Image (cartoon, rainbow, N blue to C red; front, side, top):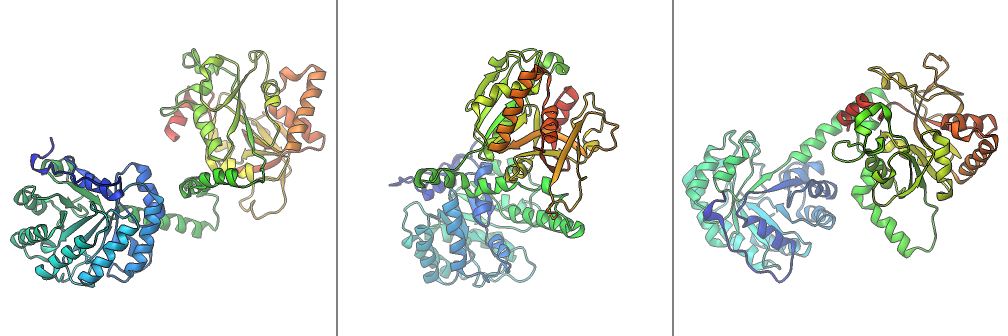
Length: 554
């Protein structure tokens, strides 16, 4: 239940500003949360995670700039960082404003600049300038109460948005001055016009914070930063009637751990191969940066037309090895962590700007009901193979095109490698297919024999690896990898496929031919596919074991 003393009136605002959104959080009857960010990217990630507000941490911004949290970053540098954060997000931001970067005059100028950039609130602490981080051992020098009250009044008199909030942070407990001094300062700051009080502690238990909350008794919103008493159940904060909790520096700390680990591995291995599948893909980076908006803008404002890549997904089979799981739906529509397998595949294509997707259905086509796809039906799916399904879709694509089995999942970078290739036909091949087959495999993999095996330095070698033939003999010692069921063809490559399909139809062998056979025929006629080797980071689903494994990996 909300604490009855903490239902505060929300002032009317002339506009739905970020400041008014923050004021609503601050005065909410529920415990609200802010998450730390220190630049535009981390701010986007915080909003993406679902947080309704952002804490622009002074410690994190300073550390990200490579300096100490001791006002070594100037307030103009902080403002510049905040501007990027504000432009990148729609949720309100509260700045960790240290001591206000000087006296009352510095602080009122800061408030004006924050309001101009859409920052919703600022928190200032009652220590002298330059400040020392509260969690560093050493003497903490507190500001004079009257001087700090004057700073609060100057800030409130200077704000350009009526809903802009000034939060007064009390450091008396940090400095060892005791509970009475903390309460005396809180009352004075409240009377000076502070919109909320932040009570800070560096003890590993929340006792003095909860004791302060009890004494304060909801006279104004109360904010905490439970960095040192992190093990405290959040429900205790709710029971104490606290207004807001700030997770103050965890994105910065997480990024330090991740960057150290990845940098160390790359340095030791002198290769990117082992880490590529474990870091965010470039497509994720581009998505966070808003590149999709640029694509739409280019379509709107640039006259030049670019050739868009299309896709054909072969998803006609039932997947009989999955038994009752596919009784009412085809394999491609099986649930994989809350959504159909095909939806994940289409989203992966869409994220790579491949939006024109044709799905070849067969078994129970009515169950394939995803939006934004084209459907064609292979009526003879029960007696025909993959090339027959491909032939059904050739009228819907003009190239370039991605061709994919409908029962695979893979990391985004695998598709990126194919899209970046300038070859007429390019196939993704897993060079470590034996590892992929661990646990026993009941179906024969599409193994390939190439003109050269996989090498760690493949991306430094300008020579292309080319397909010679396919084999499904797992004991074939000449096999260099497994085709994962993903290919890309240029317009010329698509025409070569189309011509060969016509030849197969004329021979009467179209319905019995699979894609490996088709690519092998083309290779024998001088249209060999280029090979892009990968080392894992994909799964195909043929039976219940595969489905369980895919759910665990995804």
